[in-house]
Amino acid sequence: MPKPARRRGRDPLRRNWFAPFAFIIIVAALLFGISVFFRVSRIEVTGNVLYTTDEIVEAAGIEEGDNLFFINPIAAGSRIISRLPYISEATVSRGLPDRVKIEIRESQAVAYILVDDVPWSIDSRCKLLGPGEQADMTALIRVSGLTAIHPVVGETVAPGQEDTAKVTYLTAILRELESRGMVSDVTAIDMSNLSSPSFDYLGRFTVKMGQNENVDYKMGLLVSAVAQLTAGDSGTIDLSIDRQAHFLQG
Image 1 (tube, rainbow, N blue to C red):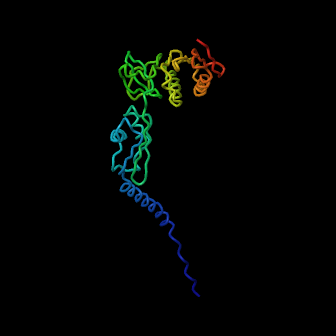
Image 2: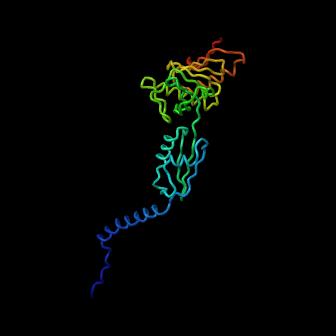
Image 3: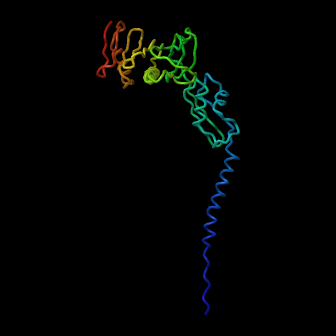
């Protein structure tokens, strides 16, 4: 009696050849779909006042018709910040299937420094916003004891290697003043002494900051100390000792 014929299994060589070929076909189809579809047709910009939408889009280097997936959001945001000095933050995001959203946070001039007797305004991150006339700086905080070497609009203050730490400390002070709404209460900051910069506050107090540490805590101490003083009090508030505010009348 003849034996029944065995069912042939799939050829392993054929199976091994087909798997990578199928993968290549799928990848090619996906790349083709991405290149044909997902084209940018809408670019939305929010948060801008000083710059127009067209200026921001141009600085980002994004155009309608660009492929959505080939856009680098981080690089686009960096281009905006570097090309437009009055922008401090730029967040670029994709929105399927065809939208790009750009969220802007514009810089606000809060202080100024003198460079060869020319005042340059800066924001709370010590970003140089540009030179101006002294009369235009009256509402800003005057910073002494610090200058910039070869200032460039849109760049951070570069004072030289020996004074780099001053920029770091000044940034911490300005950001705290800005976040607490205290910028208009300060007229001048003296960064001459890195170990204890000082600033004029409310036209009545000289505030000594001490070392660059716990700046947010020290600002809280300052607010609490002033709240306990009378409207006629004036003098020095020292925040550098024992994590307490020490007031010296006069």
